[in-house]
Structure formats: C-alpha cells, structure tokens
Length: 364
Image 1 (tube, helix red, strand yellow):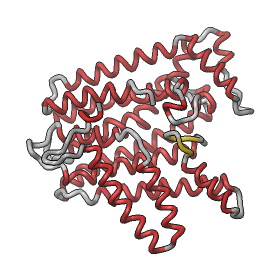
Image 2 (cartoon, helix red, strand yellow):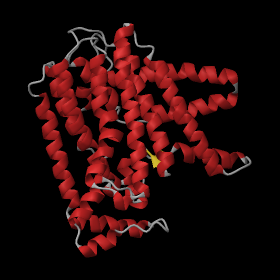
Image 3 (tube, helix red, strand yellow):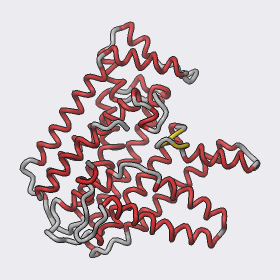
Image 4 (cartoon, helix red, strand yellow):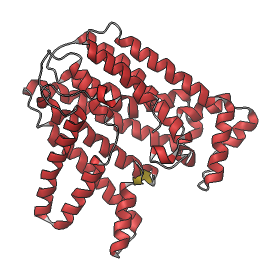
C-alpha cells in the first residue's frame, strides 16, 4: 500500500519514502558532526535526537504534502527541489511527539522508551547528581526544541523561488501554531474534564491533529507548486479537515483499545489520565446513570491496569466505540467526496483516496 502513496521518483529507482529518509539522514549527519565538534556530549545528544527522527513512523505528513504538491504540479516537475520541505515535516512531527510524551508522561513510543524515559535511564546509569526523571524531562524538551529548529533549517534548503517558499511558509507556520494551540486545549481538558464537551473535543482534534497531520501539509504541498489553485485548495481544505478529524478519532479508539504490541504505546493511556477525548464525551452522552458514575475519574490517584480495563469495558458497553467508528466512516466518505470534482491530477486523487483509508483504519 505504501508503495502507491510513496511512488517511485521519475528516473530514480527509490521510492519517495526512501528519498525522504535519505534527505533526513544526510541532513542529520551534518548537524551531528557540527555538535560533535563543539563537545562530545552534544554529539551524543544529537545522535539521540537523530534516532528518534529516524526510528520509524508512517511518514504520513510528507505523503500528504507530496500529493498536495503532485495534485497541482506541472507534469514532469522535478521532486528533488521540494524534498527538504517534505522531510522538514517529519522533524516538526518529532518535536510534537517528544513534547507530547513528556506532557502525558508516556513510557513508550513506537515500541521503545520515550525520549524523557531514555534520558532518565542514561542519567541513572551514569550516576549523575540530581533527579533522573527531572533530567529526562528537561532534556527531552530540548530535543523537541532542537528538532523544531532543524525543521526550519531543512525547509530553507528547498530549491524554490523566495516567493514560493514564503507562501509555503505561511501554511507551515499556521500548522505549528494550530498544533501548539490544540495541545494546550488538550492539556487544559485534563484539568477540567467535567466542563468538556464533544464539540470541544472535536475542536481539539481539529487543531491538534487534523491541521498538522492532513490539512496544512496538503496546503503546504500545494503552495510548493508556486501556482494559484483556489479550487484545489478548497477541495484540500474539506478533505483535510474531514480526514484529519477521522485520524484523531481513530487515535482515540487506539488510545483506549489499541494493542501495545502493535501501537508501540502503553495500552489505555488516555483512560489512565482521564483525557476528555471524543470517545469519552460520547460515552458520557450515551451512558446510563450507573455507567456515568462508573466513568467518574478520581483525580486523587492514578488508576491501575484493572481499573483501566474496567473503564474501557464501561465505555464499550455504552456503544461509544461503535458511534466513533460511524463518525470515522462518515468523515472519510466526506473527504473522498470532496476530491471527486477537484481540479487535481488523477493519480493524486487516487493516492489521497487510499491515504484517507490508510490513515484512519490503521492498527497503530
């Protein structure tokens, strides 16, 4: 499936996915060499950041950006000029993941220890002074910051006219602001879950996830063409919002019911923290009085595995997961329909249709 959404480059045997990985690896090698020259400890810090960037992932954001570009680009337009811009989105993604894991105190990501846990373990092994957990969280924040700076540097390497890069930069900046805004609302929601609603949960999904995963990468890719395509932009906006929300709704289900072996993240993480996701808000709407009492979150202590399993069972009994599945289907259908008459190339329409399913019906 990925071979279609990451097609071969014209005149080159490697897939676009390989090209993005190579662009990232080459860029990061030079950055680490520069850090090494300053101090060996900085080189080690940089290598940990590199490993987080290159340590797997679906690379969905570059894929959406590529097809946003490809949908409107002139036939035969070379891809090499925009590769740094596409790859920069993965550095932004790493920034967001590392900071998100610190805020959620998640133990694993992609089946490996999260950055803050990794740095805390390094601190403990070295026998350094101070609290390992505090060191781990502080250092992980710095890794995220570094990745955000690296993203700006890599984006600037795209071989594009200044006006084109400036237009693309507007979508890139808006994407980052919306992601931070959505993350703040996500954190705020955990402090006042009783005041939250389904509409508020979907607003968080729209800003924290839909924008920076689907909508803005598509518009970013379109801007990289340097062409004015208002009708294509409108289709991308409608598709991006619908599919992006469906992506977050799938994340809500995986956060409650995903298999940690497959997702690479702890099971029931959202249920552990009481995060007011759309899934939980719908469960509250559908719950009986008895079920609502069982779903009440006790802020005094962190629930154990048995409590998390019990809460997941109560949510399932309300019918909320089935309602969320229906919402995902409706949004994917709406997103695909938005592309039907869009003035984009047929191969881009087919790939974006496939990506809508790939992004929203995934096991991890």
